[in-house]
Amino acid sequence: MNLQRILLTAATFCAASLAQGQYIRPVTDVWPAAVPDATAPKASPVTQTGKDKVLRFDQVTNPTLEAFLPPADKKNGKAVIVCPGGAYNILAYDKEGQEIAQWLSGQGYAAYVLAYRVPRNRPGALQDAQRAIRFVRAQGYPTVGIIGFSAGASLSCRAATRWAQPSYEPQDATDRLSCRPDFGILIYPAYLDEGPEGTLTPELTVSAETPPLFVFGTEDDVRYSGPSCLTITDAMRRAGAPVELHYLPRGGHGYGMRTGVGLVWPKLAEEWLKSLE
Image 1 (cartoon, rainbow, N blue to C red):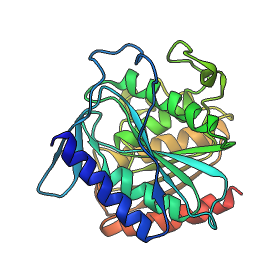
Image 2 (image 1 turned 90 degrees about the horizontal axis):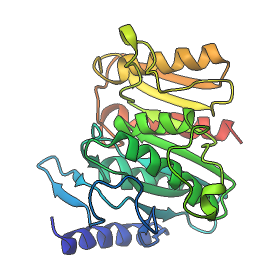
Image 3 (image 1 turned 45 degrees about the vertical axis):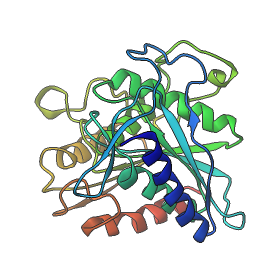
Image 4 (image 1 turned 180 degrees about the vertical axis):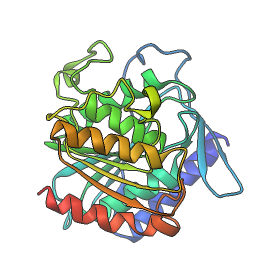
């Protein structure tokens, strides 16, 4: 997909948002100067749309944030960063990004879709997430949460548990702000059980200071969210950190908000978010 097609896609979402009383700010570079530890020059994302009607970002070298802001009469003064999934190889940008951001903005949140570095760049993705949290906080939001799907949930969990561990050298005043998210929402998370015999992934440092987490997955998602949900919930419980788990018997993986249990978790998450107020 070329740049013209990308802009057309953005315009389509903008028109839909305007019809709902919402609007989308221009896409902003996460890194205004050089991208730390860059492996390729900054460029527009390489994209494609498959038969499943999912807009995929196949390659991201210039991480960005796309803002979906709430109507003036719904603003709650809080922000959420949205991390699409895709096995750290691609980003399911509309299904697990833009569509989620529109839902959040309808709840009063300023929602920012993060296009983090792919493919196969977990260290770079964490740098992008930490910088994104700081960037959004610099926009005047004292409360900044993070939500992710599959690999995006893995990234969200890494951001929630590794905030005290700098992943890059500070570039400007924004990097003096905290990168600790105030809460995290993990939907069908992956890669949280990569420790010995399926224990917690070693890089995840869970403590009583870990922000509250909402975790949703299904038992039949045996490769990803099934074990990951239980592993992170147990770690949070043992550390005395607040966690809410919703674990259904069936639902699979990759549903976003489109089908099946993808119609269930948003209502549960809305109630949980209210409980944090």
